[in-house]
Length: 290
Image 1 (cartoon, rainbow, N blue to C red):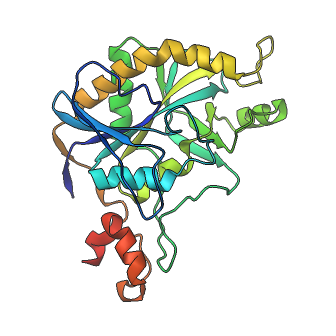
Image 2: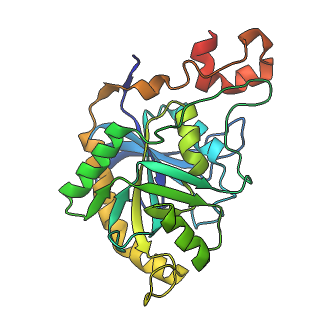
């Protein structure tokens, strides 16, 4: 089993990296075979542990969920050496018990995006099939949950994140349908981020801040940008403290079966994979072609 030194990638809002204790700070602009990431990555150390922050929608929130270059984002974190990824997201609640202001750490994903997003590193002459039976890393989920508890943030470990295309919010009929599917929360960014992290062999977990009840709950106003931003503003400091606790709780190095998640995924023999494809994917799968 592969052992790696801990380097935590955090994908979320642009304000996350403005936190006390972040040292050796620098910006890294990374180009990838899949284009540019959402923005420059802010790289530094928290308590001696390397970290890299990437604003998913770009600074100033410039990219729609469908416009985010998920492949470039994950590839860039892989190039920098990320061993784990924590996704910080705003979500709507589909269940009474997940009230606005609380946190959910989901364990499953229901993909309801429409196909506008590039969702795999495979293709262009190489076929691969990576398992996503359990989209999130159990150990990293536990670390996220423990960090929330340490900060006294009401949180729930478990449940399904239904990922929709956006950018619009749900109709009431859709919201009730997702509830019938027993989904816990609804958002717009878990896919293909989770599958790309798995293909890149990076353990991944989501820290989901609930901002609203979507539009299913009677006697509650339907979700709006104003309501979402109001809750997010209250959660900024909490999210920074939680991220610091997550990073501090991880060992300096670890083994994880997900570090080898693509070990038996590639179907195409090396000598049939075009040279340009092998070169582009070498940081991801080169260890299986050497």
